[in-house]
Length: 601
Image (cartoon, rainbow, N blue to C red; front, side, top):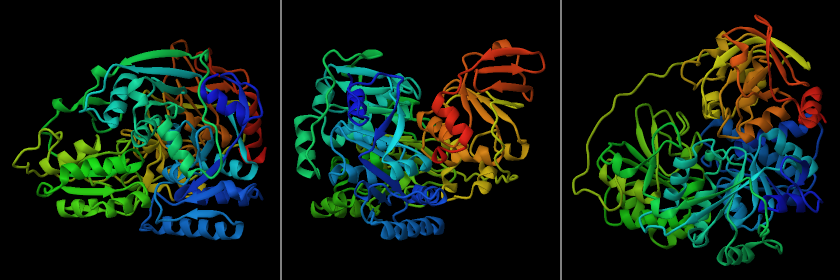
């Protein structure tokens, strides 16, 4: 078996599992963050459910450690009260990013399983553990039952051959992989990384690479733990563990070899993490701000690399530099080693440990027209604010802060750039609020055809509305960040069906990106493929999501009336009576659909 198959088998009381099987997986570590935690509690209380094992259950407040938003503050307080009542440990606003805490505090260990309302919970692949981001309904089920259903994924083995250049950082490695595989080249797969380059990666570098599995559409990116990583985990683990390695005769869907000699310093252009170019090609592009941090590049190694470049220098005039260590432990190490002084002397704003720029409300966001070099993992439009975001390594980010434009550490000019950009006006959209329709096995409605791929969750439901927990309020924000479709809540009618391209729902684990369609009483979404977390969230909410292969035979036009047989997987265009096959509901999907919610099973 592969690594993921061994971990799932060990956590489902099975001797072996094979791809495609749906099994009940015991979850060792069950996390809820500050914005997702309130939703988890609501699901538990609404369904009169209780926490199965509080020793495995934790709150991690990492999205908004400042409590600067009233709804975040209210949600955090609600979680604290629930934690007191149920004897649940809270890693509060002073602790940092939950997935990092899980590694550094020994909550998770190689071979373990973890779920979180964080879509980058697969960062646990850095230590050879299986982490998954899930919606608040899924997490509530894990808290109440100790396990969740999971479909065993197929595995891909990637071998990195050759030698890594000293100029190529871990962030460059994963950006080079994104350039090759794109947003959906590994969609639905679990990836295992091998090769001498991989074996030599530090834990911090492994975290950087594993944290961006989500951006490639992968379930997880697992790196077999090295002796150094195993020793680190043993020194911190709360209990003994045995690391998990793939069998020599493990079966993979694909085995891919990549040459590290071809890796070059890279940067992702605004809007898409996979739109990667070589830094040399865009050197000189003027910027307004720089952010160093996030679960991808907030480790001590990243802080040290930035400090080496910033030491004794000042950021370019007008450039805003924000630095946020991933955890409080790292923050204190920066203080002890003198890095905080270096950052402050350079002109940086140093924030409390946490997610920072990736989460609304904490430092790192940018404004309309602002260009930012960020070490985060996502640069979807609107994700880190309303400006443009370039993704790069900590070294590139620090060098660019000094230059005032995009550059690398070997090409910092004596005189920095100066510039100014206009501010664009925000478009405000509002719309009707509706309720969810009845469940049927054959549904009928008019279609909206959205011929786009990789519609991410920030386009579907922007992160500035994540604190909303009232279903009826969510509908008016649907597609509020998708160009050309901002007025969808006004145009949409009850019973409508959306048909779109591949990788719909890529990105965040936010449940609202599904529930907003339920609020508008939309009936279903058909796509060529779905983001893995999004598909789970929809199924668990009893909301139909189906895949198709080709629409040509339907001669389908916008607002045609169609019927879809969910049980048989047949879609019919009522205008011409033409049909195509779609995916059909699995047994578990039909059961949840008929009940209306995972928590009602």
